[in-house]
Amino acid sequence: MNQNNPNLLQLNLSGAGCWLTILATFLLVGTVGLGFVVKGILLLIGLLLILPVMGWLGLRWWLDRNLIKDQCPACGYSFTAVNQTQCQCPNCGETLKIEQGHFVRFNPPGTIDVEAVDVSVKQIED
Ligand SMILES: [Zn+2]
Image (cartoon, rainbow, N blue to C red; front, side):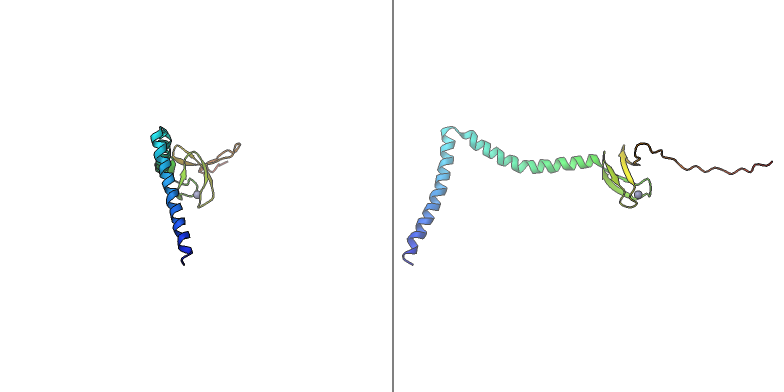
């Protein structure tokens, strides 16, 4: 026990010395004229704190502008998607694109979209 105690004390002292050295270094750096280094570190810490908040606000703003909630033109299922992208209806699997805030059926090039029209039947009498 008596042999261990001085070692423990030495360890504590060296630990305190280490912190004192860091503190002294910071003070020295501050007084010598390298204050901009400390300011830079503080600025970096500030940026690290502010950037996630800014990023979150930016994301919220972007989502407000780009999230589109509309109904699927094929089945009428209402869901949300990101603007200027292609998406698939989660209900019927129809490939959709978003134009002017509304879902439009996505047609691959060369496809002609045909709308069914009711044709009234006329009897032709000879
Ligand atoms: Zn659908």
